Amino acid sequence: MRKPLIAANWKMYKNPTESTAFLTHFAPLIKHHDKAEIVLCPSMTSLPALVDAARGKSIFVGAQTMHWLNEGAYTGETSPTMLTAIGATHVLIGHSERRQYFNETDTTVNLKLKAALAHGLIPIVCVGEHLTEREAGLTANVLELQTSLALEGVDPAAAAPIVFAYEPVWAIGTGRTATPEIAADAHKIIRAQIAKSLTPELAASIRILYGGSVKPDNAQSLCCLEDIDGALVGGASLDPTSFAQIVTNAT
Ligand code: PEP
Image 1 (cartoon, rainbow, N blue to C red):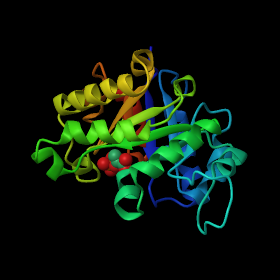
Image 2: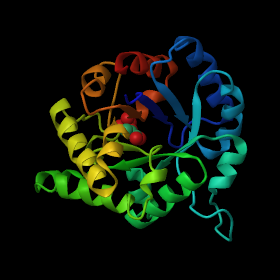
Image 3: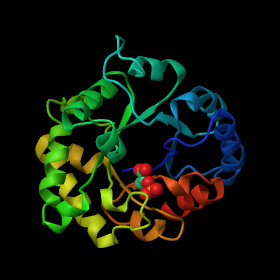
Image 4: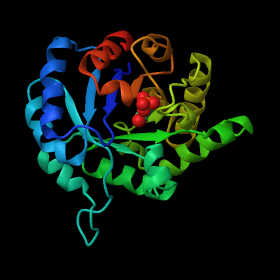
């Protein structure tokens, strides 16, 4: 049984005061909601305050990226041990905006995934095709390649915590969503690749989220399909009422 996971990616929005104010409004709206794992991913500067504020509320707090090394001369970076030291539990890896603007590659995704597992952080690994790739009929190739490279050299014995997020790049922040059929097909492709790269048992237990313009009114149709285990939400997660509605509708 895969427990649904609904994650909020706040991107470069909300300072620490705004982040904890969100929680003050959001937490009562989802009180006693134990059907899903809820994860808020704020900016780095809001992480410590949000971790503290979320204690005892069954809401997890994760980072939007990290480096794969523990320390070193890497100006501006944050290490896995720095995240665990403040109580972060999850980390987004390979978000398309990181791939597009910050030189994230399949190789660094793989290094970060292994580092997250080694440090007990739950990695949420984002994969997804560009519009040109979809139009050229390359969606399956892209998803298989990104998934297999992310998992290269990962020990199946350590892989259970991994979460994937299928995020078609053309649907992120555009208001354009994948149809449930497109999402379901993509999730099947990713799951089949996980079976090849790891084991069929892990493919059956690893969660795959959908991300790309999820809103309260489409959360149910997108997230309640057989192979879809929750959502990674950007824009609509910035408002506590809207994100709470997504949690309710998607689970
Ligand atoms: C995201 O940032 O991961 C995302 C899916 O954004 P949006 O929901 O705004 O499309």
